[in-house]
Amino acid sequence: MTQVLLVDDEPLVLVGIQSMLKWEDYGARVVGTARNGVQALELIEKLRPDLVIADIKMPVMDGLKLMQTAQETYQDPPLFIMLTSFEEFAFVKEAISRQAVDYLIKLELTQQTLLAALRKAQERLAVRRRSEPARRRPPSERFGMQPFYDRFFIRLFNDLFESEEQMRAQQKELGVDFSFDGYAVCYCELPDLSMEHMSQERLMNLYSSTTRMAWETATRFMACYITPLDPRHFNITFCLSEQEAPIYREAVGGVLDKVVEIVYNYFSVRLLCSVGCKVGPPMELSASYYTARLRLSERRPQDPGVVFYDGARGGGDADSVFDMALYREPLLRAFEDQDAGALEQIMDQITDSLRAYPSRQLQAMDAACNLLFLCLSQFTNGEEIVSQIFANEPEGYRCVYRQRTISEVTEWIGRLRTGLVQALRSQRRGYKDQIIHQIKGYIQANLGQRLTLNNVAAVFGFSPNYLSQLFARQAGCSFVEYVNGEKIRAAKEMMREENVKFYEIAERLGFENAFYFSKVFKKIEGCSPREYVQKLKGESS
Image (cartoon, rainbow, N blue to C red; front, side, top):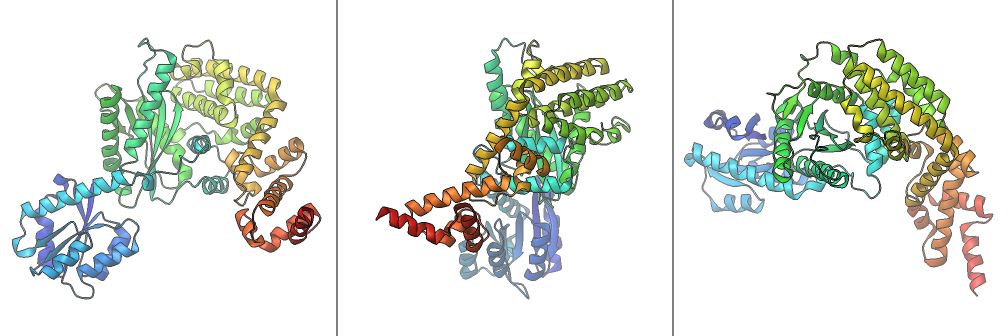
């Protein structure tokens, strides 16, 4: 939906333009009006319209100055269609030089000329969105970081963060943009193609390609993140701007209709999309995710490919989401400590509580998926471990989606528990060594950043206290000692090979200043950076 702002100092002109078209019939909406350029700038800041139709001759600030100011102020300014009562070439020339979409003379303005200008603006908006996909896409393509993005969102969907502070620390480290006015999770389901006599490799390639195509399509039109869940399911987290939030069903629905159409045209795969409730703070994404799954479980054969949770279906069940918060801390502690006995006890408590409510199958499925995603995200080799547990199933661990009763779901959880306990007892020490190896690799790849214990712990999904203890036990030194040691090692390499200033080295390696760099260097090497360089010169001579 194209958001349009009208600007003219003549009230009758504003009324005339607003009533000249049935704007919504042409994919547009008039979101505001202004009487001069100053008022218009305030509304541009507040409403962020896609298109401004403005008179050139106005008091306080004219239309050309308005366009210039908007283009200089905003990275993504609105497009402009200019109006005037004077057919003067100077105005036309300046408007064109500032890339106005069109230039309309009021006395000759008709429904047809206004509609033609609107269509031209919408075409340019579409080209802009296609040509700038990187700006609207989240930075999830950073090399080697995709698993961390997936793990971050899975923890949000399943309400597994201990606090908002912990979530914000990891968000900042990963560069996830949560500056939007609202969010909505779309739960996407691909059809079961296991009976189509395709090889497992071909099935995986097809699922991967359709997921990628859905992401490529959605990010052309809206800011969003995509999170693979399993070969048949993935989530699209739509980030809603101030303009999109009030009409999120229309905005998200239009994007998803395109996604469904393109996926079918390319792969002959009918994608089912279910959008959960709109939420404000990102910490509430678990509610949107749950209601999206709830709506999909209640879909009827006559429902379209894209459905929305309306709050009426399922009665009050949406308010009784399985509360993983009751088990979150002991579960995370058991996973972090690789404590097989504690994990077995907690999972038994979960299955006992689920059996007490035999009618709430979706609640049980939600619990099973919470546990599954937790296993996959908390273990570096979680996919391998869980796949081995369900190796005898044609669909592997994804057979969880075929469980239809509380008894079947709790039996699946029981198999998961037994297999996890056996795996933990056999690989406890090796797993921790592998974690430390990965953390060291992350430190090596990010020596130019300020590597605090809190930030690195957030990236790997651990508490700072646990990571500190784990590092001390497994690495034989503290986290800070290792980071500083690696940074000083890199500094020494620079001193040997490059003619650089000490403050430049400090800046490159993420030290607060050259003084702190010198202090750390002397503590580790027993001499100042200057003395070290002089020593190198003496050795070379």
